Image (cartoon, rainbow, N blue to C red; front, side):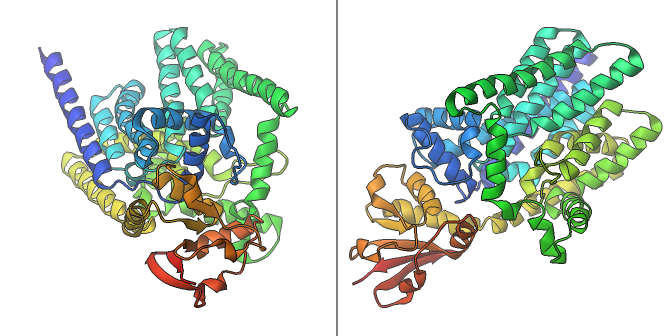
Length: 490
């Protein structure tokens, strides 16, 4: 009877946590943010229409993220081609992630209290709340990876290789979203070698998982060999992507600090100043990386939760210092807060285990402070993404569907999505320096964003002289933050 009561209690608390998680994600929903989600929505739309990536201008790597594009296309097919369809999948996966967090924490620690606390911390983690309603790949990608880890570890504990195969399939799918699975592959190889050397045993489950990761490379390579005559096409495109947006990658990111082109100085700055600061001192993370690191040191000293500690510290080191290129050593720049996702699950569980060991009154104080801090950081995210202006901008675009809008190709993807791609003749690209402004008729609009233009110029796109918008040929209609509408009046 006591076990049944305990089970009912834990299920009740988990249900309440999920309900609170849903409410928080609905309340702080962001939606389309006129960023990478514009490219993903367009690629998913063309995939659904049978003309995949037709006339696509954008990051070269994005068309390769076929799992995410496919589920978004499926969402379009079910919910209609609109903004809602682009965010419903991340939202549902974020809620499912709360359940996964509980079960994975329980599997790793065997402690229901730690499991519930882990789910609670995840429910209030600002980055997960906000990105539950943004059409980015990071949340879905890591969800598949963590679900694969859950089945992989469960297969080891219960000696059921079928579960390891299921985990391998999830790893396989994740590789067609983003390359974060390579972190896990490295950790699995290290773990496999350790087990072979120390325990004189070959872990079948890890071998199965690694075979699926290798299988993905082989199958993908064969497909790309047929389509592009390049077995290593993914790595070719990764290199192209680096060149396309070089300003977002090392060493250019680190050079902004010292303004000196010295490889070793830039490398030091990238790892120990930019990346370490981004992980440990970012307000959006509520200092959880620091807490989890301290707890990891304690675990090593006491030889407790070593597998969980290995997962966290291994991912932490790889995230901060692993190369983004196989020809040169180039660490990833972690300035974008959503890059935390590979680290999030082990960080949350370790933090929960640390808090759970404290005295009750201190535990309540810390958890309360965390919950309040999580909500406050969500409001900071709203400012960061300029939610108010973008919400009004989307309403304004949707309200004026019949108005023809000229804009840069990047912003055009967003305009078309907000209008549900209902009439693509109602939007036109402004591209190349010889663009003919006479194409615009009286009453046509120009949607201008200086930040978008500046970044697109870094990507080697050419544009005409936009100073014409300040002449008497145009009049300003509206502006929403950085987005300004001009109307052709003559």
